[in-house]
Length: 160
Image (cartoon, rainbow, N blue to C red; front, side):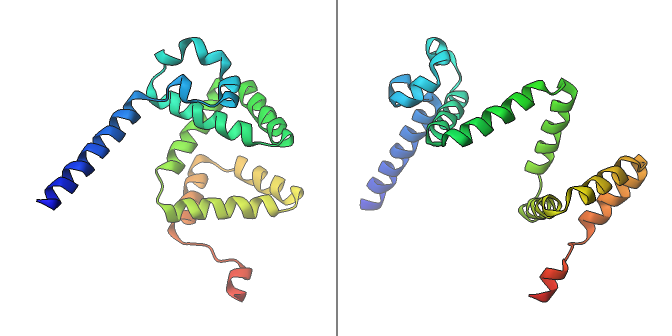
């Protein structure tokens, strides 16, 4: 009997949580700083879908916790994004979707390779970019296949 009551309570709490999640974020539930950041959405807030409200709320929360320098950097990145041609934005979105669909191990490998690339001297990074740009599509495909077939160990990894 006790187990049935606990199960019923758990189900009711889950149902309430799911209903609240479906309902989105009420404008009144946003704190003053979040409302200030999201002022341009205030008039139509109730018409936004729940997922968009949640994303905007979370983004506003991140924004208010940023330092002025972090905000400047974010604004610069956003402006760079807006200045990109739409076909380039589509390429970036496709790459993000591919990354999101990767296994955690593959995601880690991509991140590690990116960090390693970022630590290279600018001249070496440019050499690699030029080399890849000059490859045929078939050569690029083989390179990607080789990169995903075997994990790469660095000299530093071997020394550990």
